[in-house]
Amino acid sequence: MAKNKKHKTNAMRIAEQKKVTYKEYEFPWTEDHLGTDRVSELLGVEEERIFKTLVAVGNKTGPIVAVIPGTKELDLKKLAKASANKKVDMLHLKDLESTTGYIRGGCSPIGMKKLFPTYLAAESSVYPEIIVSAGQRGLQMALDPEAIVSLTNAVVVDITAD
Image: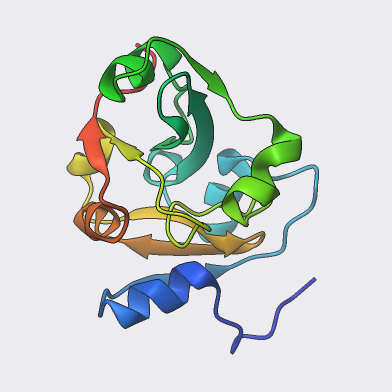
């Protein structure tokens, strides 16, 4: 399952094209351990700094991306309000790859097939860098939250459940 270190994902290529510095983390993964608790353990970093990328569908906007701490839950009502939708539902897992180009456990907010409206949880602003998927299972990238904003046109907003 180890990947060649020379392999670059779309997320990494885009970061490099835009001259955004990031730190790459590679780790062994299994289908049973895709959660941020396991990733934080393997990487030796606080779980609060590991953010997961979730894809939802708004009744007006279509696909939207939410990037939230792995320790939190997405509040669909807050996401709907932030994205000017009346209703937001999670994208069906079977549609994830065809919509984003990424698979479950390897979905990065950077480098999707299209630049979807992206919302970065407000919690990101307390860290000098956060860790997101680099677009492949077992591969993460740490970067400044502002870099995610610039690479995805993200809006930083409160979208997590209290």
